[in-house]
Length: 245
Image (cartoon, rainbow, N blue to C red; front, side, top):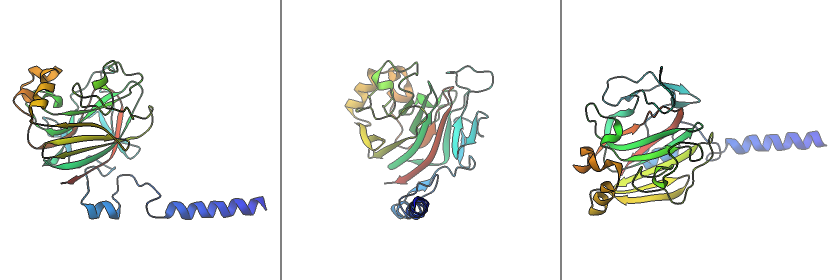
């Protein structure tokens, strides 16, 4: 009897996970997402469409692992030392959009997600682009300031509430940009909201590390690339998708 019950439960579970909307597919769009206008920026197999910021090819310290793109510590570098490996999706610049990315951090990891990226020769990706922080909030060395924690607008606005999951877990961040109005939604909860190109924005810049960066003081670009940071720690990214608004 117990064996029959086990078989019945196993069959029922197999049928259930096969139903649309129950199983989770990685780096694929559902019929609903396609209808809503979502597009994948990463296919889970290669780096088509991506290149180094201020470069022509992908940096060597990015690999494909677990159906994700992973940045690793560059050769000859120590943890926390980037290898000039910031990357961007080069196929298109975006202006009004909704971007969704899954990310997973290793212990002590630090990285970032960027939008409206404007390349400045000889400068890192954060020189002229807003950054959504990716961080191990518990053990990263840069965890002493609220606006440096995961989901925050880096060094400008802290994520509130703090909804990041433990190291080794996948987090989902959704960045929505519409006519300068921006929100960060982390793991289903809105954690940051702000407006670009306003006096309030200028005041935040003036109080941040970016107050001497011409890329910020002269104004963030009205449109730009989507980018990911190499900060010298292993971090994974997958399910990178976007829809224009």
